[in-house]
Length: 460
Ligand code: EPZ
Image (cartoon, rainbow, N blue to C red; front, side, top):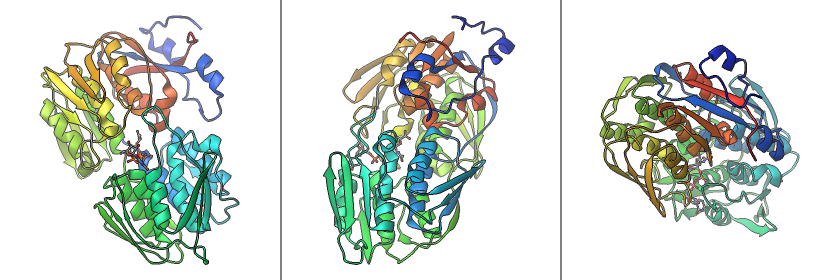
């Protein structure tokens, strides 16, 4: 493979474009040697419309929720993501038959063959742990490995475990496996009052699913308010569950005996939308995007407007972002919804690197979600980091560089920074990006970006 690419010749580059690889089949050793990279030509000018895919963080929970009924369910608006593939793999090991037709996923849950999910799959995708709630409710027992930490933090699950114990489950963690079973003679969980020490999205989802089939009423207090929690509640209610208060800090679930089939469409991905909003802002371009739910983007819209970006709502499901010439720095503190989303922090930090003044970014949700600081500084940003606080001092221009993605949203931030930088940026570690973005380079190329996924030997 030639060591440098003639980026001036798009047709020559095009011949080297490869389709996103199916990451679930690559061995880790291959990943180092032949890992694809994203080569981005900077100073991009974007224009046009970006289609927004279904919400990854809803769909993973919806897939876990499908286990609650033996009649299965159909989930629409499902993008092609590595995390969706991993969740499918896990559900299939449980006996679920899954067929995909475009963005429609059909899950036949009529014949679960085991209550145990394999470690090698669960450890790769934390959201699979949420299935412990629906599996326990459906079968009366579940064996799910502790998901373990990831790049952004330890990711403990004690809120999930304590909540399940409140619902009458015996839960034991043995050799890294969570063994849980309903203690009541009829194998059903018992409704209970649960208080979450922290409004954990996953714990709220796990416990809400478990409670749908419990005997009696469950109240979850200090519940997470994220839109993805509401979407999961909507699916469960479409399946026949009785849930009130999803989207507020108190959710009440009246258990029922059985749930039925549902045909359900997932909400659009607010984090993907925010990523493209920042891409428009940082390249001082104009981009429209849909479908979106503007109410899910309030924090992102408000911050962009404070910075000096124009955001126009064109209809109930389309917005247009109009970049400007002068941006002023703002402070950002990540908080549970409706506070500023932690999943948008890295992307906004990339934008802050070229805003006038100092922006203080405080990450309060995860303990290690500032690894993109080092990579942005390699692109000429001026960011000082102390514990969970980053002070971003604006610079006139970023400069392209080879950078390594460390986690999903950091990879998106580096792509955005590369679009604006002077010169070429090579983003490595694309397996992070492919977890949560469906065809991001295609969507960006369609609005004028010049970026190509290529394979080249990377010095290991
Ligand atoms: C969900 O993760 C999302 N993932 C994350 O998106 C998102 O960043 C996060 O919610 C916060 O909004 C999915 O929905 C699949 P939490 P989750 O439980 O449920 C601590 C992305 O980039 N905690 O709300 O795991 C935890 O360690 C991903 O798309 C406990 O201490 O998040 C963290 O510090 C990343 N004990 C904080 O709470 C527990 O039992 C928030 O975690 C559970 C959580």
